[in-house]
Amino acid sequence: MKKNIQNKDRREFIKKSGLAGMAIALAPSFILKNAGPHDRLRTAHIGVGNMGKADLDAISSHAKVDVTVLCDVDANNLAAAKKLHPNAKTYSDYRIMLKEMENEIDAVIVSTPDHTHAPASMMAMNLNKPVYCQKPLTHYVSEARAMKKLAAEKNLVTQMGIQVHSFYDYKLATLLIQSGIIGKVHTVHAWSPKSWGYDGPEPVGEDPVPETLDWNLWLGTSAKRPYKKEVYHPGNWRKLMDYGCGTLGDMGVHIFDTPYNALELDVPRTIKNECRASNGFGYPENNVVTYEFPETQYTTETLKWVWYDGPGAPNEHPDLILPGASDASKKGKKSKKKKKKETVEDKISLDAKIAGPGTLPDQGAMFVGEKGRLLLPHFMQLPTKIVDGKYVDITSEIDAVSKANNIGEIVRNYESEGPKHYHQFVDACLGHDKTTAPFSYASRLTETILLGVIAGRFPNKTLHWDSSSAQFSESEANQYLEGEYRDF
Ligand SMILES: NC(=O)c1ccc[n+]([C@@H]2O[C@H](COP(=O)([O-])OP(=O)(O)OC[C@H]3O[C@@H](n4cnc5c(N)ncnc54)[C@H](O)[C@@H]3O)[C@@H](O)[C@H]2O)c1
Image 1 (cartoon, rainbow, N blue to C red):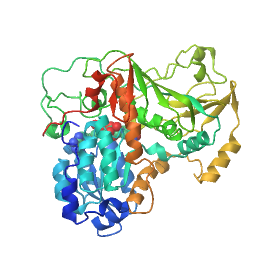
Image 2: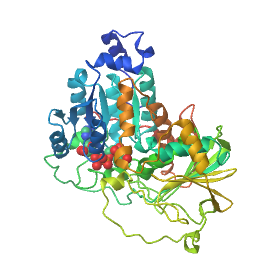
Image 3: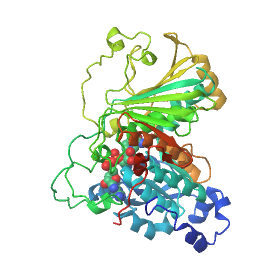
Image 4: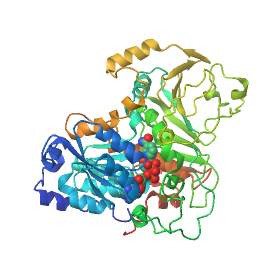
């Protein structure tokens, strides 16, 4: 790791807090109860605009949460959040906030652009705070490994922000796959029509920084760069290599989650990204990323995984032709859909359209196994099984695994389902539950995603990944595993 991310405060903290020799073995809830004076959770929110606002709403909808601090580098977003939580203190710099509020907060929620996830979360965890961090967990592979290590060392409650992880259909698909409904799985296809990329040059010149934005704090640990209107903040940063992780790091994390979890995958052995060459500033769009994973108890000897973004799934692929598919879709022709203005809900994929019987959903995953295929649309739709070109009724299997594992009833309401993942984090912090996407899991999933992103810098070349040394055999790729941190 090049700089800053090391767990340098840990020893000092343990010495100061008198927990030497004890802290590692303690249950997370014990540490938390000692940090807070009551059985309520005092939360600090870093990044409160857009998804940060959705995170704030979901966390604060838990009856035992007191929103104590709000932090944002954009004064407009901070003011809007303050209106909703007038008693919360406000900050623009998370470093000052964490130092000053250390003894008044119990947990931290990080909802900033990707490049700030690890710097803010590591600092919070070094202060012994449980962290809910948005997906992808980090911007660099080295950060993902460091986050996992620190969370484990400090025995902290952690959760990555992939709220659909706690939705009925995804839990159901996981159980169906693990029950062997299609036998051992040899291939997964996963796709999204989103296309976060940029092929233009790095912008020249500089626009005046809005009075309401602290540009230096927005850049944070990333390199100093002149401000340009609408190029970076808000949202557009995800197209750019210094801040985001392209479509893989956005929709990929959600859509990978269920197959990855269901098949109990570790990180891949090989990765190849077929895409255009990048100029080193923006990500290439239209990635086709092929991974090979080592065997698990739910896969054949090798698992092949293919991700498609931009044009989405190639519906002429034999694995992806659905029963009742029209000739047009078999030949891969796309239906023309009216483009509507994108809302936050679109960004978090609330679009749960039911696809026609022969039409692949816009986003989703197909598991291909020894005994058939299982299609899992993204999201809030039941998985369907296909054998020999025909849909197979799996009602009885669904009933059986649902009841045996007590996963509840089908709910088709994002408002009621959405907060579950967040409430699970709050309850875990209070010692009443366990998180299902802790950093131990999230770091592996994020590493897998980031390896595909790095492969985009070497179009059409197969990279070989050695998980034990955390290095590629192709040494030229190793420089992208970590980043230089700027002092800011
Ligand atoms: N789980 C989901 O469904 C989902 C959906 C959308 C976004 N996300 C994730 O949420 C994160 C934010 O995405 P977004 O679309 O809201 O981005 P955005 O650019 O629209 O908003 C980011 C917010 O964080 C603030 N911010 C930026 N740097 C900060 C810093 N150093 N300190 C404090 N505040 C800072 C910005 O001012 C803004 O309010 C990303 O990691 C993204 O991947 C998750």
